[in-house]
Image (cartoon, rainbow, N blue to C red):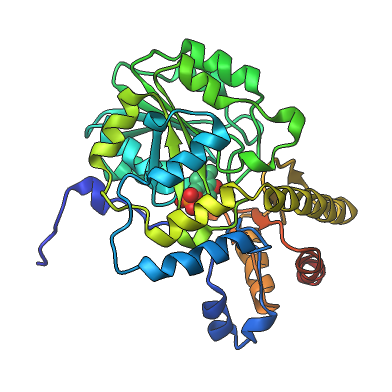
Length: 368
Ligand SMILES: *Cc1c(COP(=O)(O)O)cnc(C)c1O
């Protein structure tokens, strides 16, 4: 009999399934890497901003030294951009780090964590990793049902994850609804408001969650440099919360969780509003391109506020996997979402116009 290590709740974790890397698909299907289109991980199709590349090249000179453990200059850039005090900021190795730090800091084994059906996979992983008890609240129209979430709070609830916009469904909760929700959640339960796709929101939908942080001591806003800012490979994100929360997160994070190149690139990207604007415009155009094609093909999709679209590719539970394989064979990588309980759907990240066009043609072929 082999020895079993660790607690049951760790052995029960199903590993995170990411988008397939381009090199792996090229090997598996005998394709030319250069011709593969990857629309699978909600990355910025423009890649990184040139300003970030330059900042990293300069920072390379000092790579023999440890990074600034407190990320002073990066926090200054965040302060300048978002108008929050430095004591409110926790830097993370991607915002994934912030989500995990929150689970570690606030949840003990057996205590409950609430998140929505069809919400970001990392909420389940972070909960399981600390032995938390997940309360998964049924989604409403593929998005968060905040009233049901509030009604699901139990005496031992320590943490609630909300994604706005949500991944993988792309749904959006209007600011007024979130604020009404924050009002009713007991102040000793931490609410993580995960805003990974905030930069893609149209101006009329933008809201100032940082203002809510001042009012709600139990609110932790999470942001990432991986999506609109184009730095997914570097792993930088940050949390914004009052010091009572921020202090705890900073005690348990790795002292050097954000490396020097990442810090330098993030500062440059935060200051590069032209790149952000270009990314948002490209995304809006690509959304129109994809959804017009879906309309023409009579395919159902969930209206999305992020940089991706969830589209229904069939009425049987094999449809997502089948269409995914048919697309892979044509060199197009998208994201099957069967692991989210959406086996009839695929999630398509919005790419460059030519990438979107290649995907649309491949999808037509695959459905024919
Ligand atoms: C992509 C994503 C993140 C985090 O990405 P990082 O690269 O770890 O910053 C967080 N939340 C949601 C909902 C996401 O889709």
